[in-house]
Length: 194
Ligand code: SAH
Image 1 (cartoon, protein in one colour):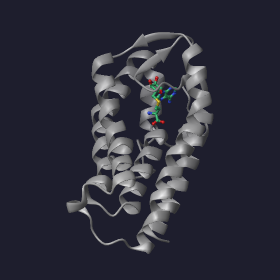
Image 2: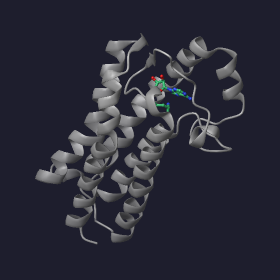
Image 3: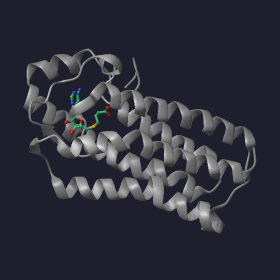
Image 4: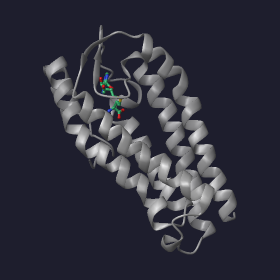
């Protein structure tokens, strides 16, 4: 494993993300929305996350900037990052399959929105966000640069912590006791821990 290969793997991760998400994004455009929350706030959080997970690392991969933040490349870290990236993309694929038409890129409730509590959602409430955490961690392991490596964790972390409580409140308002009972028997991201 060389730095060049690690950068290439990071790029392949981005391509995998688009391939996994594309059919769901197309279908989502055609699925009517019943309730849309905090549009400006949501768009801002999405922009912060996109900048951290994509724009900043892309600049680094293409131009090697910002050079002052570089540290030594280590192949073992990059291999670990590769496995975590593959796990993250597999999880992203699985969550899209289980969530189906209920998926939205922002906080929205669809018309005829069914609460999903099966498949991977049986144990976790936010497995798709877990897959983004894995992606952000893999970025930190693949790119040996304090800014480009950590920007995904900062960017996605901002979106996650600002959104997750609002999302659960929206689900409680929409599904009431059904979601309350679901919350009582599930964890947010890590089974048994959080
Ligand atoms: N937070 C979830 C889903 C992310 S997509 C995860 O990380 O896996 C965000 C949208 O999914 C929200 O707008 C909400 O409408 C919908 N959603 C979240 N949890 C859901 C569930 N258990 N069943 C159905 N829809 C859900």
